[in-house]
Image 1 (tube, rainbow over the protein chains, first blue to last red):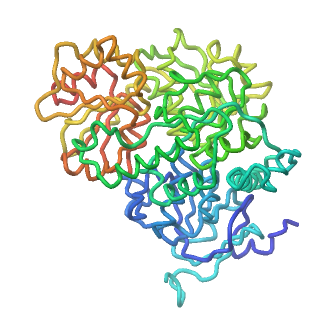
Image 2: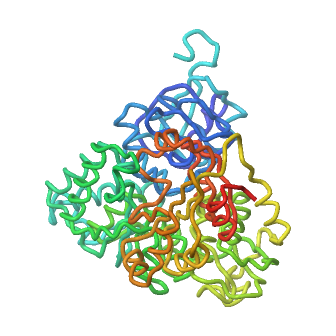
Image 3: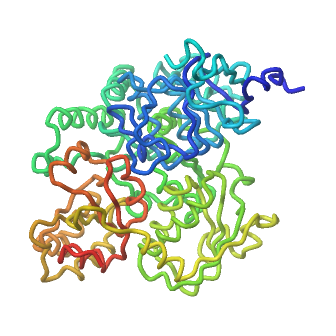
Length: 151
Length: 413
């Protein structure tokens, strides 16, 4: 039995993970991500025209991205946006690239890679989720719209 | 991870606090990536500029200097965000300019050679087959892996700096044979006679395979690509697909045949790129509600040969009234192009030639775009038309000669 299989009904299991346990609002993207290509690194808002999350802020979110784009910038940029107070609480990637991992670990931001089910099948944007790197699990704390959700 | 006696000593602080801190970070990365051990490296190429590092990154470098951090292998820097000769005219923030000066000073104190170029592989250092290096940006990595047969993963700024301080990097990804084998094939059935065509190939292949470990095997091309062609191909593959390696049968050292490049595996897919595919790429771009007043030759920086081509196309001509045309290159290439006259031709034509920067990483670019009323950016680089999106340019890819025509006429064709 997979060590984190008991969480499956309420969330998903990831392949690799780093960082502290965090809880926050899920932000799901159908499109990949790069802090250089897509993000205004002074506001935390995705500004690339046509990005599936254009106009949304990543600040304090648990960000789900299927893929990484580019790019070497994340290495320093994640540390920079964390210092500016506009970083997400966690990055959850289907397929990351080394730069996302290097950047998140350097900045001390929780990051995971690989998932056993498509996040969209079990989690919706706005759900409050808990990322536990030690257990390699992501669980739903509250559904969007439930009392106390979305704070 | 399996650590050597020397590595255990570094972790105990035998070489000082800076290498200890760097190796601790690398071990944490290794745990995530599943690396079993480290591999010694000979060369580091790192990104480090104030636009991407911010105040927190500068503070980190100050700490490193205070800890006595020193590079133990040859270490060079990627393109940066400020050309000090042009920053005032470009409307860049004086406070950030001063921070960039301090940042460069910190890097030099650590023994970093601030070459400020994203084409180090054409101008500074050419690793040989099997040589392990720790390079970033992505365009440098894919060129090293593919064209030289050297071995590197994408090493972002902090990871590359850590490698420079410890002299090693993690053995995973493209340092290992298993990830260097091709995974799918791409037949090239098109003339591909401009660098923009090669970038367009990278866009088509990269967009369809967004995976660091997807390794295309190009074959069937009836010609001989130049270093600049492969530069634009690789930069676009890395940009659109986050790819770190390609093979090119008869051209790159690990691809004498399709079968050898695939390393005995079946290709997961066989795609073909035709001239019609390229024409669809070019047709897919259009002016938004603005005009074609901005033309950029950058991302990657221009080689001497690219500058010669631009000089030939711009000789005796001038950028149209109200238009702007930028070229970026390295300090060394600019010096050479001045010596042979290309830079003067470009400047007489009204082109701004920037040194040591890439256009898309310029400090203050979004405010600069607004101040100049730029809505569209035309370029012959498939990479830059992709990467500049966060600054909200509408971008248009065109072949080099067409870009020059647009720069001189202000009319998009």
